[in-house]
Image 1: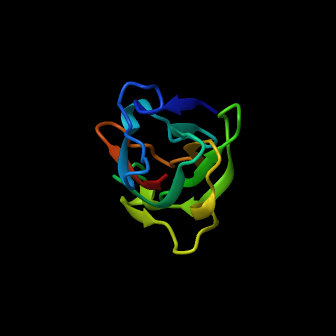
Image 2 (image 1 turned 90 degrees about the horizontal axis):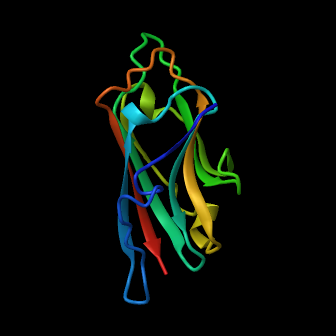
Image 3 (image 1 turned 180 degrees about the horizontal axis):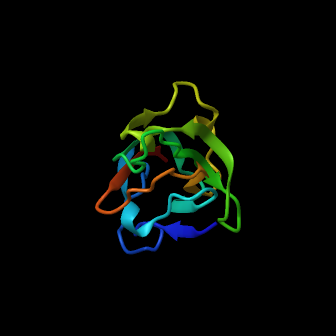
Length: 146
């Protein structure tokens, strides 16, 4: 298991948070060439401070598993305090990395009302059968409100 951080999680790419003036749409790029796709790898996306609610999200990615029978699968949600696991998953079994594609939150998800401080991340629940990460990206778009 390896832990990776996006440039946003490292503080290298700024993230504008919502305030009383309105909602924000924040996009967090994931560079697969510097992240892992082996079972139990984690990718720290960003920190959301207390008072910031996640209303919706969209995750899109390139095909990162070039095997004829791809196996890559992910969970997305809140990471534990050590940032070594996704312990409150908003969605599990994301297979969009197998062929590329888009995943979106389901209306009425329980994470919509959560306003506690937390770290969001991805966890590889099943590693890529044949990882093809070079020059591949993902984009996690968060719809936030104060």
